[in-house]
Length: 178
Image (cartoon, rainbow, N blue to C red):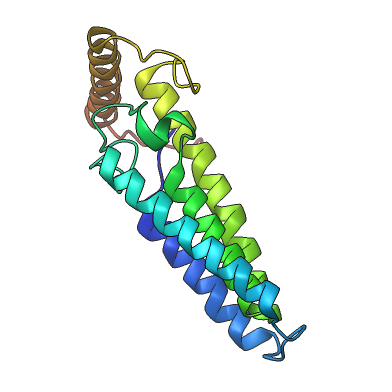
Protein backbone atom coordinates (compact mmCIF):
# COMPACT_ATOMS: atom_id res chain seq x y z
CA UNK A 1 0.00 0.00 0.00
CA UNK A 2 1.42 3.35 -0.98
CA UNK A 3 0.76 6.41 1.09
CA UNK A 4 -0.39 9.63 -0.46
CA UNK A 5 1.46 12.81 0.43
CA UNK A 6 -0.21 15.18 2.91
CA UNK A 7 0.45 17.90 0.32
CA UNK A 8 -1.83 16.01 -2.04
CA UNK A 9 -4.49 15.74 0.67
CA UNK A 10 -4.44 19.46 1.43
CA UNK A 11 -4.30 20.34 -2.27
CA UNK A 12 -7.44 18.28 -2.80
CA UNK A 13 -9.20 19.99 0.11
CA UNK A 14 -8.19 23.45 -1.15
CA UNK A 15 -9.34 22.57 -4.67
CA UNK A 16 -12.72 21.46 -3.33
CA UNK A 17 -12.96 24.64 -1.24
CA UNK A 18 -12.15 26.96 -4.14
CA UNK A 19 -14.51 25.07 -6.46
CA UNK A 20 -17.30 25.20 -3.88
CA UNK A 21 -16.70 28.92 -3.41
CA UNK A 22 -17.48 29.56 -7.07
CA UNK A 23 -20.28 27.00 -7.41
CA UNK A 24 -22.45 27.70 -4.34
CA UNK A 25 -24.13 30.82 -2.97
CA UNK A 26 -22.45 32.88 -0.29
CA UNK A 27 -25.59 33.40 1.73
CA UNK A 28 -25.75 32.14 5.28
CA UNK A 29 -27.96 29.08 5.76
CA UNK A 30 -28.79 30.51 9.18
CA UNK A 31 -27.52 33.39 11.28
CA UNK A 32 -24.73 32.19 13.59
CA UNK A 33 -25.75 32.60 17.21
CA UNK A 34 -23.99 32.22 20.54
CA UNK A 35 -24.21 28.42 20.29
CA UNK A 36 -22.38 28.45 16.92
CA UNK A 37 -19.62 30.62 18.33
CA UNK A 38 -19.37 28.40 21.41
CA UNK A 39 -19.05 25.26 19.25
CA UNK A 40 -16.38 27.00 17.14
CA UNK A 41 -14.37 28.03 20.22
CA UNK A 42 -14.58 24.50 21.69
CA UNK A 43 -13.49 22.99 18.36
CA UNK A 44 -10.55 25.40 17.99
CA UNK A 45 -9.39 24.80 21.57
CA UNK A 46 -9.67 21.04 21.04
CA UNK A 47 -7.75 21.38 17.78
CA UNK A 48 -4.95 23.31 19.51
CA UNK A 49 -4.81 20.82 22.39
CA UNK A 50 -4.64 17.78 20.13
CA UNK A 51 -2.06 19.28 17.76
CA UNK A 52 0.20 20.46 20.58
CA UNK A 53 -0.05 17.18 22.48
CA UNK A 54 0.68 15.20 19.30
CA UNK A 55 3.81 17.26 18.63
CA UNK A 56 4.86 17.16 22.27
CA UNK A 57 4.67 13.36 22.44
CA UNK A 58 5.85 12.49 18.96
CA UNK A 59 8.25 14.85 17.22
CA UNK A 60 7.74 12.99 13.92
CA UNK A 61 3.95 13.44 14.05
CA UNK A 62 3.88 15.71 11.00
CA UNK A 63 5.61 13.09 8.83
CA UNK A 64 3.81 10.40 6.89
CA UNK A 65 3.77 6.74 7.93
CA UNK A 66 6.77 5.79 5.79
CA UNK A 67 8.96 8.53 7.25
CA UNK A 68 8.21 7.76 10.89
CA UNK A 69 10.66 5.49 12.66
CA UNK A 70 8.42 3.98 15.32
CA UNK A 71 4.86 3.56 16.50
CA UNK A 72 4.08 5.84 19.41
CA UNK A 73 1.81 4.41 22.08
CA UNK A 74 2.09 6.99 24.86
CA UNK A 75 0.49 10.33 25.64
CA UNK A 76 -2.38 11.29 23.34
CA UNK A 77 -1.49 8.36 21.08
CA UNK A 78 -2.58 5.99 23.87
CA UNK A 79 -6.15 7.31 23.39
CA UNK A 80 -6.27 7.62 19.59
CA UNK A 81 -4.14 6.63 16.61
CA UNK A 82 -4.45 9.84 14.59
CA UNK A 83 -4.83 12.87 16.87
CA UNK A 84 -3.81 15.32 14.14
CA UNK A 85 -6.50 14.11 11.74
CA UNK A 86 -9.08 14.15 14.55
CA UNK A 87 -7.97 17.71 15.37
CA UNK A 88 -8.39 18.79 11.75
CA UNK A 89 -11.84 17.19 11.61
CA UNK A 90 -12.85 19.14 14.74
CA UNK A 91 -11.53 22.36 13.21
CA UNK A 92 -13.57 21.89 10.04
CA UNK A 93 -16.69 21.15 12.12
CA UNK A 94 -16.11 24.36 14.08
CA UNK A 95 -15.63 26.40 10.90
CA UNK A 96 -18.85 24.95 9.45
CA UNK A 97 -20.74 26.02 12.59
CA UNK A 98 -19.29 29.54 12.64
CA UNK A 99 -19.74 30.21 8.90
CA UNK A 100 -22.89 28.29 7.88
CA UNK A 101 -22.62 28.80 4.13
CA UNK A 102 -23.19 26.05 1.60
CA UNK A 103 -19.69 26.21 0.10
CA UNK A 104 -18.07 25.95 3.54
CA UNK A 105 -20.38 23.09 4.49
CA UNK A 106 -19.52 21.19 1.28
CA UNK A 107 -15.80 21.81 1.80
CA UNK A 108 -15.97 20.72 5.44
CA UNK A 109 -17.87 17.51 4.69
CA UNK A 110 -15.49 16.63 1.84
CA UNK A 111 -12.46 17.41 4.03
CA UNK A 112 -13.79 15.16 6.79
CA UNK A 113 -14.21 12.28 4.33
CA UNK A 114 -10.69 12.90 2.98
CA UNK A 115 -9.24 12.83 6.51
CA UNK A 116 -11.03 9.55 7.24
CA UNK A 117 -9.76 8.13 3.94
CA UNK A 118 -6.18 9.15 4.84
CA UNK A 119 -6.51 7.67 8.34
CA UNK A 120 -7.46 4.33 6.79
CA UNK A 121 -4.54 4.48 4.34
CA UNK A 122 -2.10 5.28 7.15
CA UNK A 123 -3.51 2.45 9.27
CA UNK A 124 -2.83 0.02 6.42
CA UNK A 125 0.71 1.33 5.94
CA UNK A 126 1.47 1.15 9.65
CA UNK A 127 -0.01 -2.35 9.79
CA UNK A 128 2.21 -3.37 6.87
CA UNK A 129 5.29 -1.85 8.40
CA UNK A 130 4.95 -2.54 12.11
CA UNK A 131 2.58 -5.51 12.30
CA UNK A 132 -0.82 -6.08 13.78
CA UNK A 133 -0.07 -4.81 17.29
CA UNK A 134 -1.26 -1.30 16.54
CA UNK A 135 -4.60 -1.48 18.30
CA UNK A 136 -4.92 0.89 21.22
CA UNK A 137 -3.76 -0.42 24.58
CA UNK A 138 -1.65 -3.29 23.18
CA UNK A 139 2.07 -3.56 23.68
CA UNK A 140 4.16 -2.57 20.71
CA UNK A 141 6.05 -5.27 18.83
CA UNK A 142 9.65 -5.59 19.99
CA UNK A 143 12.25 -3.47 18.23
CA UNK A 144 13.87 -6.57 16.72
CA UNK A 145 10.61 -7.70 15.11
CA UNK A 146 9.93 -4.21 13.77
CA UNK A 147 13.44 -3.99 12.34
CA UNK A 148 13.11 -7.41 10.69
CA UNK A 149 9.70 -6.49 9.25
CA UNK A 150 11.00 -3.16 7.93
CA UNK A 151 14.04 -4.86 6.37
CA UNK A 152 11.77 -7.41 4.66
CA UNK A 153 9.62 -4.65 3.18
CA UNK A 154 12.67 -2.71 1.97
CA UNK A 155 14.20 -5.88 0.51
CA UNK A 156 10.93 -6.79 -1.22
CA UNK A 157 10.65 -3.33 -2.78
CA UNK A 158 14.30 -3.44 -3.90
CA UNK A 159 13.74 -6.85 -5.49
CA UNK A 160 10.63 -5.62 -7.29
CA UNK A 161 12.58 -2.59 -8.55
CA UNK A 162 15.45 -4.79 -9.81
CA UNK A 163 13.02 -7.10 -11.58
CA UNK A 164 11.39 -4.17 -13.35
CA UNK A 165 14.77 -2.80 -14.41
CA UNK A 166 16.29 -6.13 -15.45
CA UNK A 167 13.39 -7.27 -17.60
CA UNK A 168 14.20 -6.42 -21.20
CA UNK A 169 11.50 -4.56 -22.97
CA UNK A 170 10.81 -6.91 -25.84
CA UNK A 171 8.26 -6.11 -28.42
CA UNK A 172 6.45 -8.90 -30.12
CA UNK A 173 7.23 -8.92 -33.77
CA UNK A 174 4.30 -9.46 -35.98
CA UNK A 175 5.04 -12.08 -38.52
CA UNK A 176 3.89 -11.27 -41.97
CA UNK A 177 2.68 -14.28 -43.80
CA UNK A 178 2.64 -14.20 -47.52
